[in-house]
Image (cartoon, rainbow, N blue to C red; front, side, top):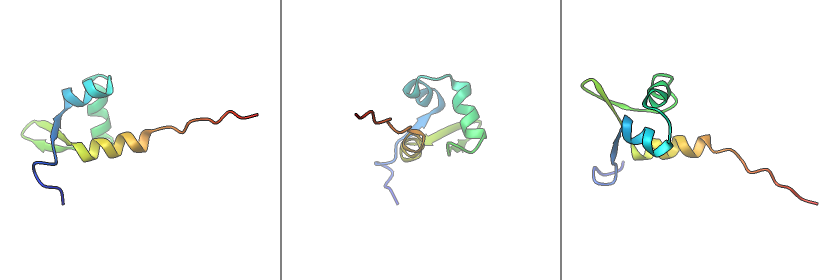
Length: 67
């Protein structure tokens, strides 16, 4: 288990800015179960590891062009 120091919590706005999408897109990912989040009162927080896992899983492969 990661220590508290290693596991930064991102706000929805920070994640949206990092991914260059709207806050609503991040909320949709959370509500759809694609991006795990922690509920803190009325707000959500996303762990760095969960964001990294989501981004890595969403990465598309590079097409190889060869002759």
